[in-house]
Amino acid sequence: AEKNGEKGRQAVFDRLMVPREVDILVRTSGECRLSNFLLMQVGYGMIYIEKNLWPAFNLFTLAKILLQYNFYYPDILCKRTQTHEHKE
Image (cartoon, rainbow, N blue to C red; front, side, top):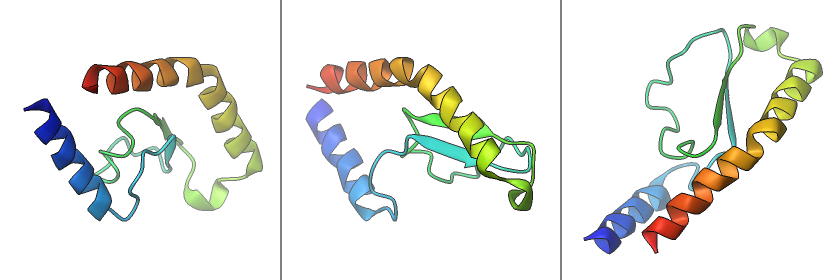
């Protein structure tokens, strides 16, 4: 049953506009909702909620997000590895 579930998940991924996992999803304007946007792709990535609106998003903000991702990357990688090992 697990293999059929994985095939179904892969079939869904193949039909998405972004058919692979996303490492970082940045949501501007401080909104904490995603409205089903990239939910499957960001399952083992980082969701970053930025309070500034998109026009105020700048290189400093991006650097701050990348530093935070770098800090959490070992945890993210561990979760992805555990999940992929469990599926096999």
